[in-house]
Length: 521
Ligand code: CA
Image (cartoon, rainbow, N blue to C red):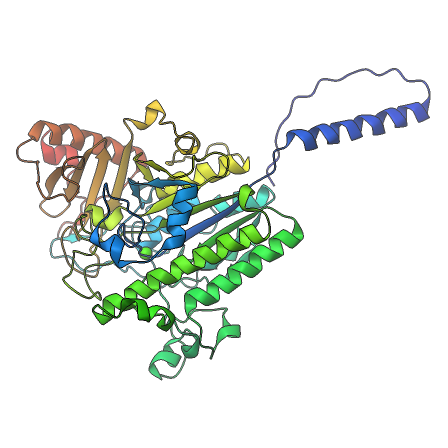
């Protein structure tokens, strides 16, 4: 526990009789305790639902200016309900286009550019970046978190919270401390480890490779800790929901405020249908029908959690946050044409374009968010760190650098002045596994309506006006060189301030030019 300094003033108390002195002391103590009890606001509970690979359009809740065909394709009534009670964000971003960078940014409150956790992790010491013809990755934190950070759950734990992780973790590589959420400040860990996908979504497969394929022995993607469900006709998201509900019950029983990080492995690959929901989607490609059942399953989980809060009568003291760790998968493994599953956004998971990073986000903060409101404020995963700490009344350690902004006033319906010029940066100096539009090493910034992408190969710039061209169809870099130069300067400042690393030249091993150098500014 961190100790806080406090300045007290001494009072001289002249009491001759020692019994009077004791009575006086007890009386003072009782009165101080009563005052403290009356003054201390009740700490809210938190439910943070972090769906995996959930795209901006993977919901029946419209987040574009008008409903889209995708909104009609999916069925998420409970997310719609959450939005009716809270605030839906139309410009919410994941901190990175793949899993580990975003998940660790939630834990640290820092951008992946700063932590150097710029890509997904698996085995200790393994660089999962794919080869690129002219570039190579810088020396990044290829084991993910180290385990000694002031993480969000660790700070909440210090602040008196029960901290619970359920589902996919993916915070650090196997055989390193951060592989286990218990080493990151979580009291409880259900089914979380270093791997970022399940071998199977089926209890009948024991959620394992052996169960799914018949191959002998354990697999690195086998989901741990769910033995009680092995052999059962249960879908992974359903088993995780059962566990989350039990944890809520326990916390209520213990009368402790809780932080529940509910991270269903869905809708990440392998795309496997939840057979209970298939009837609704018989009219479409089997792969897309399976995907739609995965979406409906996360929504059912959300509904069950909201019901349980109500059952315990704690819904008015529980802040519910729903988000995703990157854009929707569209480059492979899906039905239909690739790269179009997040339309009107361009491309998908792994990409510098909006389809890779823009995610559904809804927050219900009872008593603060006006029911049924929408915000177009530009927000990003690591904003949740200071927002949650502020709501919990837990302070950030002295000297810790935070990239996130406390969203409290935005959630009250105000946009603070400082948000107008906010710069958000993304940095992925890695080649992802699949190929497609914008899937290559890049750094990008968003400033107001403008987005500048610095593709490291070349290097070259692309410039988009997201207000008028959300789909990033018209590259304005050539016609607007002044803005490119100005924003390249801003991007370089962001790189210098955060320490974000650029790709290296494959032959020389040297970092590529800074954006300012490349723009000739
Ligand atoms: Ca993901």
